[in-house]
Amino acid sequence: MEWDVYEQACCQSVDLNHHLFDTLYHSVALQYSDTLFITADTQYFRNAAKLGQLIE
Image 1: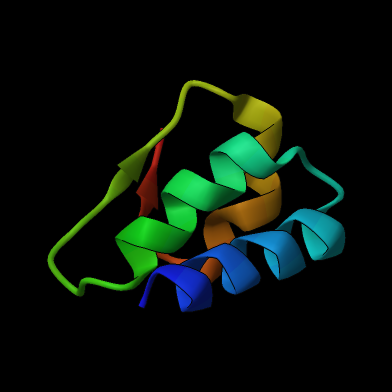
Image 2 (image 1 turned 60 degrees about the vertical axis):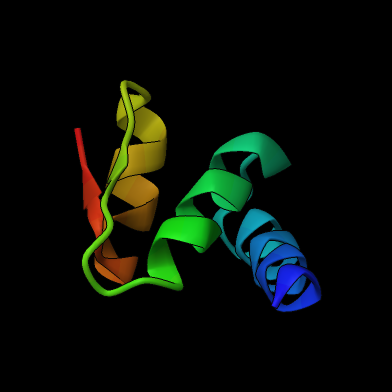
C-alpha cells in the first residue's frame, strides 16, 4: 500500500502543479473513506477539492 500512496501522490503533484508534501498527506487520506486531510493552503484546497476528503 505504501507504494500505491506514493505513486498517487506523485501523480497528484504533477496534475495539480503542487509540491509533494500536501499531495502525499492527501493521498493517505484518500486511502481511507473515513479520513479527511485538513489544509490551511488555500491554493491547494482550490486545486484539489475535486478529489474529495479535503477541508480547509
